[in-house]
Image 1 (spheres, rainbow, N blue to C red):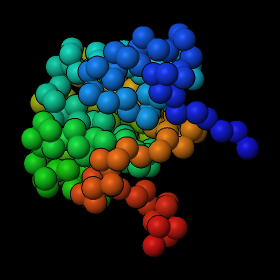
Image 2: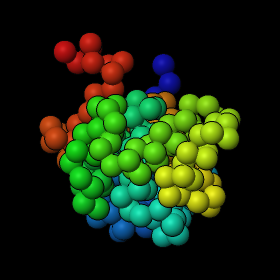
Image 3: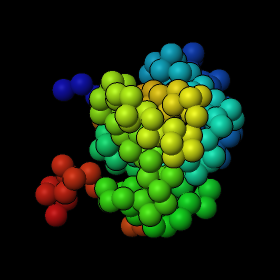
Image 4: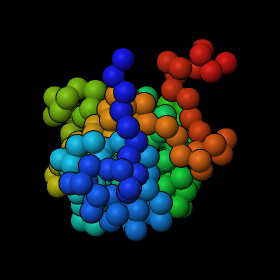
Length: 193
């Protein structure tokens, strides 16, 4: 059985240590996802770069960014990222009804945010082959062509983290024990019961 190491600053591959130190400084702790990504300096740098670009350069608001991230986390059934982005959604003051809707797979009460969620999910589910009507509906909700591609960038970011968490079985962070953050993917609910 293949196992992966969740590296620390002390035992990470040399080529990953500087990036891990940078991440730990920025977050105030070293997320276990990044510790797992450290196995491949390429993967670690790719994920951290994309995540940073979205945060610093996206024209989507911080709440809109979290809607797209969380829609994809839930679609990918990533329990680690769904918990983490629940925390991040609260940090940017997303409405609790929207947070619950994203986690529960129900419509978001805000029509613009729901359009973003549907678009993000469709981009991932259909691998970009969404059709003109889907893109037109996204634009009609008040988004623009650049934001179509920003959603693709968010999808790429989440593909790296969600798939890494599935493949490496990233352990949850201590703060994710908070029952308002934890989330069990539908496919795992029978096992958890």
